Image 1 (cartoon, rainbow, N blue to C red):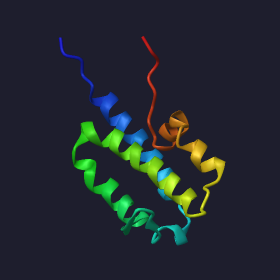
Image 2: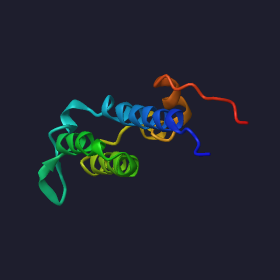
Image 3: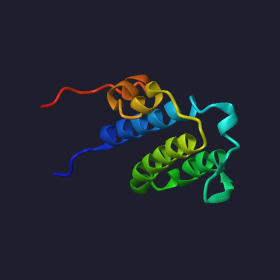
Length: 109
């Protein structure tokens, strides 16, 4: 029998999406247009748009999106915009982000 993974996949998507929104909602306005060191024609805004655009491939997007979230944090720091610990730590608080996304956790069997 093939397990029904719809709830698991949807809950994973909702949680991952909430983590990305958590970061995007907290990026300082002046950082959005900042050029990425080593890639001066690319900006934080372009990277965020890229995250949005790659969501068409579910299996790839979770890892890809997480990579870019980390990249945004590192580039922001390199540009002198060190995000507060509440934000950087919050990227790892998946249980909290899942609750914010309305994900209902089922008890383990």
